Amino acid sequence: MSSQGPSPGLFFDTINAYQRTQALKTAIEIDLFSAIAAAATTAAQMSAACGVAEKGARILADYLVITGFLTKSADHYGLTLDSATFLTRSSPAYLGGTLQFLLTPSLTECFTQLTTAVKRGGTAISDDGTVSHDNPIWVDFARAMGPMMHLPSQLLVGLIGGEKSQPLRVLDIAAGHGLFGISVAQHYLNAHVTALDWKNVLQVAQENAQRAGVADRYSQLPGSAFDTNWGGPYDVVLITNFFHHFDLATCEQIARKACEALAPGGRAVTLEFIPDEGRVTPVGTAGFALTMLATTGHGDAYTYAEYEHVFAKSGFVRSEFHPLPPTMQQAVISYRGE
Image (cartoon, rainbow, N blue to C red):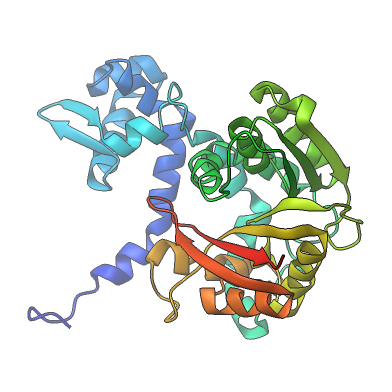
């Protein structure tokens, strides 16, 4: 409690948070940030550029100033560094395309029944939630979330190690958009990547590999990570944003398959939302546990100690923890013995 006494501010900010979501959604839909980047900096100019009422442009832009997405000087609006980087269409880091996936009803409806999910300890929508067999949501994910994973994929490549000219056999589990394996292939010119995912999802990864110029070193392995024979041996197994969908016993199954698929001295490279031991920091990372509670039957955000235990039980001799600032994610590198 502050020295000024209790305040209902946090209550109202939280209850009205849907307004922030819809304001940003609208700004992206009318391409307001790109218009400002193209010098439409007054309400009248934004009105003409975006095809909306001048009053609507003014009120929306003012609200975006209040919430930190825009700046304002006199009657002119400007972009913050974050908005210029992530919300203008000309930026290679543009995140507007993730809107459709993040706000798809199959995800948002999970949170309308959060009370039931809390009572159950897992999603109220179905037994499996988003991890149901061959769920078409992952095609949407693969197409929408690639730009969001560009920076993490580049940071993860820096943890692979070894000479960039060395031959490298890579398996990318639940590859999705494929960017993690593709980034490895771009940096390691003698790497060959095998991408494992549902057949319809792998079409997206293959398109991205073609655009990246690595399709000749990129193979598909369609199917479930649990049921498919992974083959091998591999030097690196990438396990990116996968473990958090399952309970720890299921994570051990995947970690054990990774260990068995690796050549002696190989390593599993995990990317995840890994909170500190207290599970409330870092804020963006720790909060991901709620997403898993609402959308999956058994998922969670696990600590490094839990991952270290999973990999140790699965045959790995040691693991290392690596934060990946400025992203909200962290990496674990786990080594198979020689």
